Image (cartoon, rainbow, N blue to C red; front, side, top):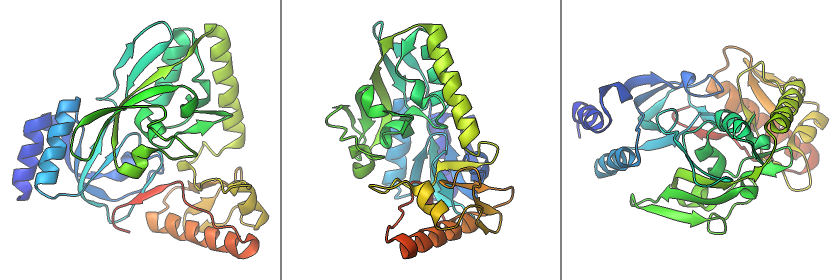
Length: 305
């Protein structure tokens, strides 16, 4: 399929305004790093997403699905293929009963947390400060401050590799530490059904505020980053291992191990993806050499480096 045919095919499905060409990925990732994607598509319904995927698979064109771009490092050479973003055009919320809610995968966690607080629904406070979407949160069983998605999810609707919609219950999702069957099988999260508890709006909002203060105090939110850079190794904390290895403030180009929290790699302004990747590899090598523990990246890397 020629480039013009592909562009026309994508625009026929989603509308012209929902397809961008040579789109800089630096504006779609929280790291604020990344070259251009050949095509950037924003479907606004499940049927549009299915049609886009059918077109790409039929033409054997590489694609990658993102939400808020918060756990992602895109190479400086960009992405040859199509980035599909499920975000602001894919964020409906349906209140099923007084404690159960069905949320489309593009809904931002912060926005959902505030909506649930307004409705007097508790149990989601831990996730409200995580800079991602429901889709990404379910995919990796996101967690913070003693809570994780596994605690509140009932089921998720996913798209399998053949483009079929499946509903998976909590057990079928196989939610573990930063993992799920969605990640293992290459499924795409369409929506999640969550069960919360009734609570007092003022108390819920105060809990959110307290967690926000804790985050701002302990995490380098003033710099672009992808959040926690490495997974927590069993029996250890990644940030402490990095600190104990003497790597607080360690720099490669404009990428740096945060001085505020060593578990974060930050972009000091003009870091390249190559800077970040080199820094991550060096940190993992030094920690392994000193402590015999290999740090695994929590950040997904895609594109040409």
